[in-house]
Image (cartoon, rainbow, N blue to C red):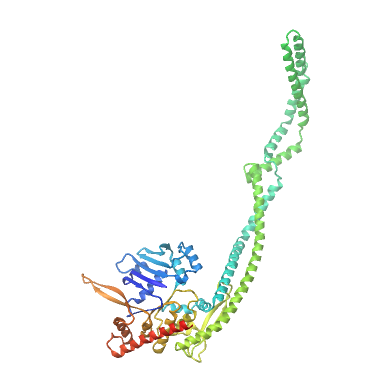
Length: 585
């Protein structure tokens, strides 16, 4: 429930602080006294749009609205706690109050919940959890089909609300997959073009049959050898000849070594040290003999084949081309080939994912259709019960000839089900049913709203219900009935009503009277001050205020005062009867 409202430097209000009780609170005041500013301030605290320069009191540089709520009734509401948690507002397990504040300066506004800064959107989202404001302009919300559907759903029980949550969850799951599919569809053409290009690149690299990341170095070296094959053969043949054959002028190197070896062996007879040198020459002779063999074989191995050179040259060109396109080295080229294969595998799996996503959407859509149809069937059953109960309430509210029906208008899948709801209304017998928005007067709308609130009170978990002049267009017995309905509502939910009707004002268990005073300043200028007076149940000031509502004058007329006392007595008796009924039941 709303415990306290504080306003500082807003509109014509300098400072106002109002503490509310549970039950039924009435607010009275002359037209233009500032009582509607209280309702406007509540709306501002919940993020209503306003220009700071226009909303600030003249001459003020800072203004503020604060609302203190007792949320004991919602203490076990995990969704509310989760909502606040997401906004960075943590409630302790035993914490039962939340403080909303909104501060205005010429440059803008700042909002907080329990001291934590939040956006205006967060305040607007919080409002449906705790309070419902119904001013004259809010009555037009009854014309909105989504609001009418919400009233129908609010008439349902806990199982109906659970069904609504199932529909919302099923829709969210289906819609999420649909969005993913839409994204894939938009990108599919780009993906296909990308896949074609990647396949072309991968095919080019696979056809190259790259295995050795040093193939380019080896191929270039082999080409270099073949390009100089004749000279290399000549050099190797000359070397082999020098070692083994020699010529007419120069004996073969191996022959000379053999001759030297023989001489050293002869000298070793006289000096054993020469034998060591002879042994070393044995090793050198063997090595040179091996070199001579290799040179002979080298000449045989290196042969000039024009076809082989062409193939090697073509292969080297291919490798260099791939390096220019895909990397500076064959290591990078091979790495790019492997990456392309992986990327294509991913795209191919994406196509499989596309098909799997379509199948998942079909499955989710079937589930959504089933639960949405269940909700539609439940709504149609609920509509029959609501029609009967609402007509009973409206007849009590002096609308005996009223007719009412509910029309269902199909829509595509949504979080709210498969239909919009339209209330059809006729205030007089014999007149055809038409859209509520087209035929109901302001007074009829006020009573319609009250009847609906009586039937749905407490279903949405609201803490506070605020009416601004719901008594518009009614008087006499109807006003008395409205007063009793509001009082009965206050047993379930805190009710605050701004009223001009004495019967409704007398029914309030808490009564605030708003008045505007014009103060003369020392410099001769005038300022306006708004005062809010709390009136006790039967004090003279309350009698005076009620007298003004009855006759337009202060008390003094015995008949008026007697009438007021009768209203107060009737109110007391009504509350006693409610208490007795509650105890008996």
